[in-house]
Image 1 (cartoon, helix red, strand yellow):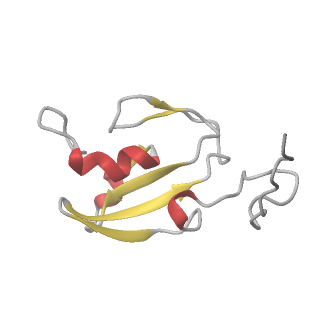
Image 2: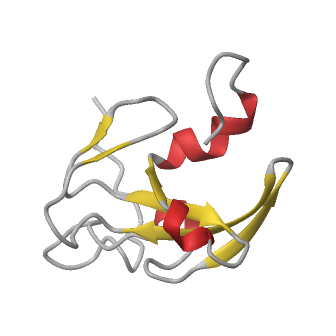
Length: 106
């Protein structure tokens, strides 16, 4: 039997909280960015899940986003769109435009 291979640790894997501070979706938590999609422009902010203990419901899959789970917050990129913020699982956000009819996209 061959020995296990060790994998190279990334800067996010080092330390006592192994992987807990890894950015969601490849960008830094807490920083807004505008994404252009076929259904319009959206402001997107990754959330590490460490902030607060609230439970949210993902509009993509209608499942709970439990506290401590990294996810995304998005809202329309027009003035006043902040009132339409929604919390999404990262995969649900990426796949929302692929959903068929019968489910709203937002």
